[in-house]
Amino acid sequence: MNIYFVRHGITDWNLQRRAQGLEEVPLNEGGILQAHACGEQLQGLSVDYIVSSPLGRAVQTAEIVGSYLGINDVHTMEQFTERDFGRLSGLTKEEADVLRASGEDMLVESKESVAERCRRGVEELYQRFGAESILVVTHGGLIRSLLRDIMDEKDVPEFLINCGVSLVHYEEGEMQAGLLNLPADVFLREYKKRV
Image (cartoon, rainbow, N blue to C red; front, side, top):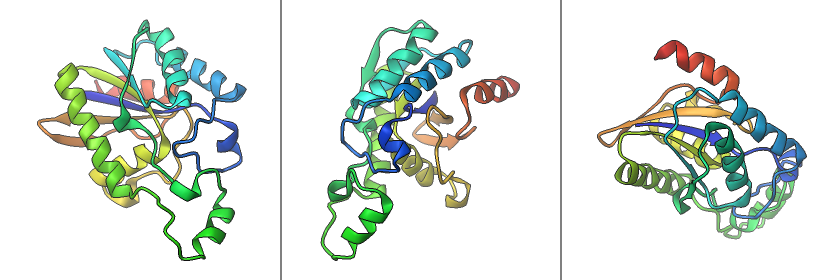
């Protein structure tokens, strides 16, 4: 099963470098344009199903991308929601550093927990849809956590671009990362070279 992980389009909080976590922050105008460009550029990619995090910015991205791929039914799954940043939600790195200095529990979901949740989601995808090609629109924190779990840390991109595409192949309970963090047009071009 091929899973194409797509990070949602950009939001105002992305531009402000704020931790979004579980907050409902909508796509801004640029994010909507990114989603349209991503969908247009991925035309020709064989996708059987589209799955999304239940958060609005991911669902909206998924619906826009799906409209270009001829898929109107977007399935949402809690397993693909963003990492819970707890008390750090809405803060910039500088603001978060000040709060962390207090030594109090920030109630942030661990990266390991996020990766495990995503693994369960991938297994459920396989149970629900079988060995198909699935596009999952989700969040940067979740994609990074999964990639750190299945490959060497040094090979995981530090920053995932909005509407960037990463490929993960799942077979018999094992995951292998392929193309990572590419703009949709570059992803499709490189993917076609490999199949």
